[in-house]
Image (tube, rainbow, N blue to C red; front, side, top):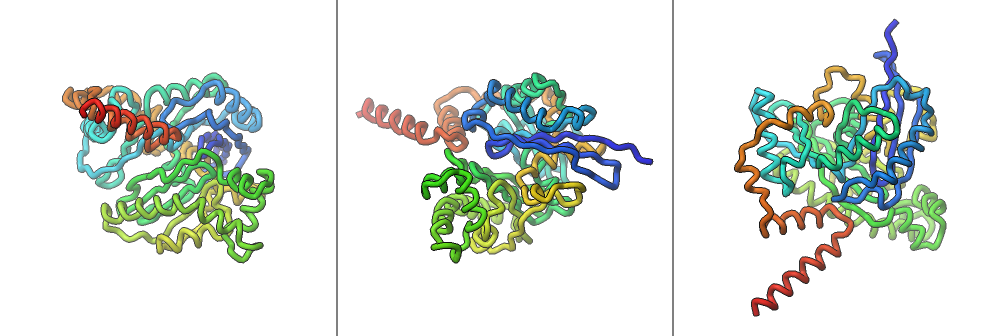
Length: 400
């Protein structure tokens, strides 16, 4: 009789923290426990380290909701939120792992505005392509400390997008698009002929879509969620007011998706076979049709719970658990060679050409580059833009 292994997967995604406990005896995987908790809006801000005081309390509450007996003997994996990690793929035929790490560090140093010495890096290879990831050491160490405070030791640390992809697309991951449509933020993952190509953050909102509906129609958030789930993007529902409002709210995401798709098409020269959507608002009626009309590719609703037994019916439509499920499933694969910031941290100490660090010296050019980076990935982008404009105006005034 095969032994049963338990796996606890935790993910932070779209202003929520998720946890699932799975049990597997090999052929059968069963859901033992699951929970999710809302995060305060200030707990996780793009471009900043996570707030320990908020997250420590919420992680403790999350584990309590799971029940200690359910996860006590589990391997524990964590998916770092897409907002706090960088993922990049590039072609390489290098066979030596030592040389690969050096190549990864050089590649990341060339494209990131952050000193490579301040980053944890991890990578894996698919055919002739290297998938490289990086996270700031301060952020990674803060996440690890938060879980240690709650009494659990993290065995594996992966990336939100790659973890979600594991749960959603369990078979071939070629020439497809996966899109997480969240209440606060949305991102897309592209796969070409060689597998993973890139992940792109599409939007980041100050308030959730559900809250925006509540304010627009002067209803409670609970009623707003019901309106979104019943009327959604159906122009025939009611007077079509909810549909028109959601179209306006989702329009920036659709525009960014089209831009990302155009860049991907030019880069990969491949034709997508389908798109799969998941996330907090993927259950909105007609949302698949809304994006399908724009990208001209068949859109399906993801089922990350497929193949997992004893999943309650009320949870089966909740595709926002995808990343937590993905890291939990990864623990059962002893041959897993994908991203693991815990397992690969020793490799990052490999020496990098000193000339790389000259590129990250704090110069005016680099300061502007870093400002643009954080403007792109921070909710305070408007204030930063105003500050940059003010500096330029004052500089022009001094020149004149």
